[in-house]
Image 1 (cartoon, each protein chain N blue to C red):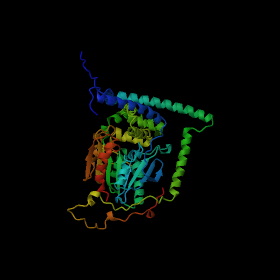
Image 2 (tube, chains in turn red, yellow):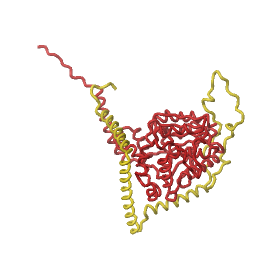
Image 3 (cartoon, rainbow over the protein chains, first blue to last red):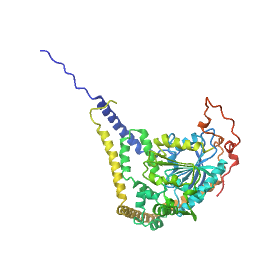
Image 4 (cartoon, rainbow over the protein chains, first blue to last red):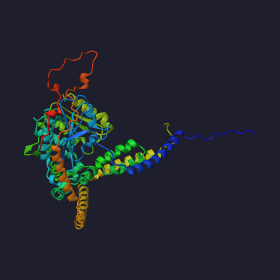
Length: 363
Length: 143
């Protein structure tokens, strides 16, 4: 009797490969998860720099040049008072600062330290009529140049815009802003959280003096409450991936190091900007002077993030519409509030754009 | 990798996590627009902060009885140290090892050699051709 040979059923090679990969990742997750528990905080902001000046919450640093020749006009970056400036200098290859230095810019940064109780009454006046002008003078002295280019990120952009509208004939030659809020009526969630019906601002500030960092951070988190938990789940899923873990931990550290805010600054931004929308309405008074965006006439670049949940594009767009500059440009790039300045998309999109805009204006 | 006949359950789970996150955020954002929700959140936040402050006062009282410094007192010492450090910083000589390259850089696109166009003549003495600012000409101002 003839027997018929039967071939065994063929295993799905893709399925086999997937299973092998998942088992490997599961093992890696276990090993790297244990390592992570005892790991020190990730190193950030390692680009060599010199602290030129420190006065309480204010800190001015000068990054060491990385090019043989630099552009004539120095670049002063103003960071938002809510966060540390190392978001722009996370790690080599993911650092806007490093990129600018290698492209031949002489870079300075106004970074902020946690304000002390003695600084509880600092207001927008202190930031725009004292801190920024003081730092500009120091940059002029250190660089030996009269002209300065100003770059502001988020609330740092808002402070730069207020400064420039109050000093239209000052030393600033060009102004570049990232995700800078102007029309606060479009920040619907922040407005809802800070409305008069929601809480007693005066009592809150009086009680706290300096607004604790966790209150500031929870305000940002409330905009996307599910993201923290989802982030933890994604971290576990990607524990096998060293690059992902490194990036996640750097961003987590940055988020955890959100800064407290002086009560005076918090009160003024909540009342005048968020509730009364005074910057957009043209009714904001700083040191008795009216802040008029039309007075800004220097060349302006505004980079807006398309998917920004903190400063939505509609909130940022009036800047270019309202300033008096003839040389002005708004660029809307795909990305969120942070990824527009730090991250893979920033490397590909925003940094080259900023460089292309600045290089001819830094001579 | 060749495509499998079987769906990937882990990828489906990852997609579900992302969708759940987006939906939850959208829902929360919609809820936050309601004044009642915003007020409730603020009240909850105020209660939490109030409890924290009561707890901190209790701890402070305990530390005082134990003759130990409180966090507030340590912060005051830290602020004093910071002020002293700032004053020392102003007195210290400047770091002369910081590189100070010439401020003569031109955009690479402007100086890129071209086969058709001859190299431009040397630029006249403008602000762009200022000599390098040397460290010796600068000083830190005191405040």
